[in-house]
Image (tube, rainbow, N blue to C red; front, side, top):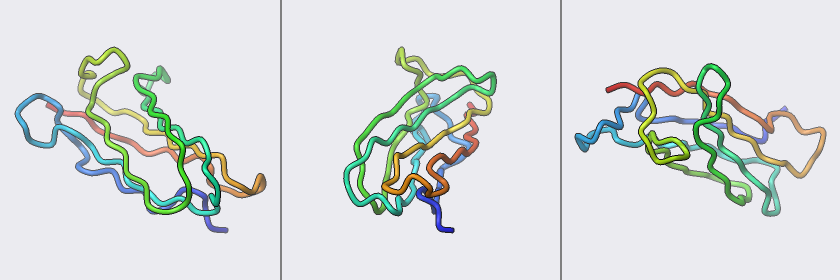
Length: 110
């Protein structure tokens, strides 16, 4: 079965939001399938402890998607170096459709 969220590319990974102008942001690119009408889309960035450090919300329809994370938490401070989980979640048009949530690892380094 084709998943609702597919073709996920996180780049550059690891990225280095340290202010030197190189690899300051990570692009979160993916494709949405089976999303014919605008649906809520949420990207959550979590520490490995499970604590959410950033939430990006949008409305999206099917096709190519691109989001940027600048390595900052909800308070606008750069997160500590380490591994983070990027959870992409969409409400697909078909309830029984698989793959409405995908999780990938992001590495932050300085």
